[in-house]
Length: 160
Image 1 (cartoon, one colour):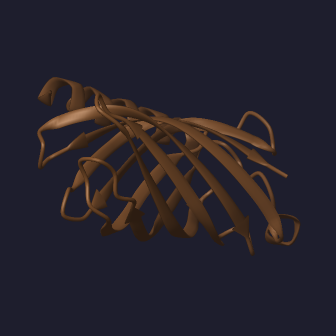
Image 2 (cartoon, helix red, strand yellow):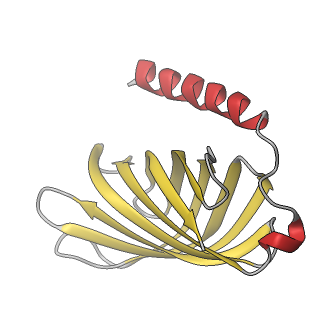
């Protein structure tokens, strides 16, 4: 596990160095009022249960400016016995064109083996932008709650 985490961190560092050399894809006037749809394939590891599950995530974000936005995240985690669903209310920030940070309250809906959980959601996305309206890259995040999770994955983002 430690080797995989070290490899992931080195990969993210290399990607971020590459992405830093890309020029800004919009100026602030062009980016205001933009919607963004992001889909992600994720792997969520639960520290409480010491097991992981594959999942999918969808974000819908409205960017007020090129730096600040707000949105909604819907997550499905496909565990052996059931599928778990979470919704997070997001505050989003682009400190640079190549990285997005999302944070906000997370609502873990109850299932057969889980009670409703209120938590905190935090995530960082590396954005490799081949075009002005499309990006992709790795994502790393966490949900801090009764059942704290660490998440890694890969995202595809579309701006419209």
